[in-house]
Length: 258
Image (cartoon, rainbow, N blue to C red):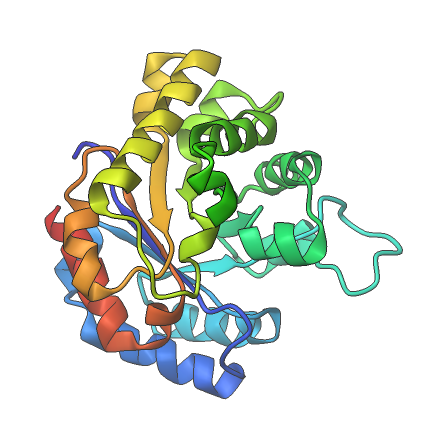
């Protein structure tokens, strides 16, 4: 694989700041140092933990990348409860998840909002992990490609080709998130290949060849090896399994060997 894999741990609404510090330290100790040559590893704690995790990463000189789970598209203003991308950048956040299915389904985020966030994340020198995925009903109706590629194209509206080449797109079927169900490696590969094809059609083959595409949806160490072996899957957006440093470490090491 010419693209460097990226494994991202989305801790969602789990771990207070003390637990987050312990988890990131345990993760670092469980990962062989040479792994970082072959794979990028990011952790995405709750907002209340970010400063604590940043301090550990910087003081201990860890090679983990700090991420966030969400942001607003405006730098400041009357948006109670929202988080400015400017604030995240000041905390040395490297990657920001946007358009996660839980944000879309539970909080009404639209493709237009996701597109604004992608642009705002880039504006502040960070990298978006832009999520897309279909529901079980859409999957059973044969609408997976139409739904996923529609989200991808809308999310990338007026985003420059060089920015797209540097970002991450995460395919996370909604029906697999938190259910224990995982798409087969062949099904996941087919959708990730279609996403790459949509990027090529919108931009060019070079941009499509460079963009990294993750798979997300109940990824575990037991399923990671087959997923990481697929040619268009460049990593994973890991939920529950990322809360266990040993389990997450095994997933990272599978990606490093892919």
